[in-house]
Length: 80
Image 1 (cartoon, rainbow, N blue to C red):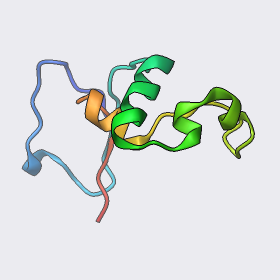
Image 2 (cartoon, rainbow, N blue to C red):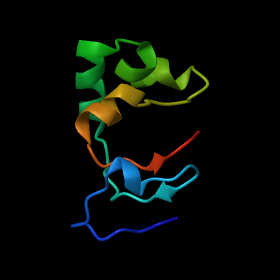
Image 3 (cartoon, rainbow, N blue to C red):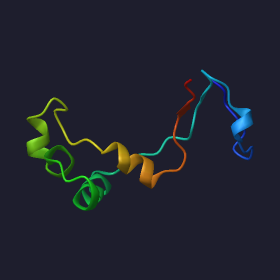
Image 4 (cartoon, rainbow, N blue to C red):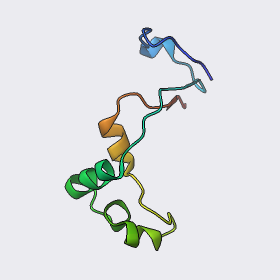
C-alpha cells in the first residue's frame, strides 16, 4: 500500500497498474444507507433491517453507489 500525504494530489500519470492507496475511514450511518436507498436503490436489504437479516448479508448493507456518491475518498486499486 502507498500512503500519500493528504495534501498531495494524484493525476492519471501518477498511477500504475496494481498500485493501491489507503484512504481515510468514514462510517456510514444506517440512516444514510436507508435515505440513499429510498431515492436510488430501493432493495429490501438497504431499507429494512429485519428483511436484511433474512438475506445472505444477515443485516442492513449499504449500496455500493451510496458509498461512492457520499464519499469522494475511497480506496483505489488500479487494474489493467
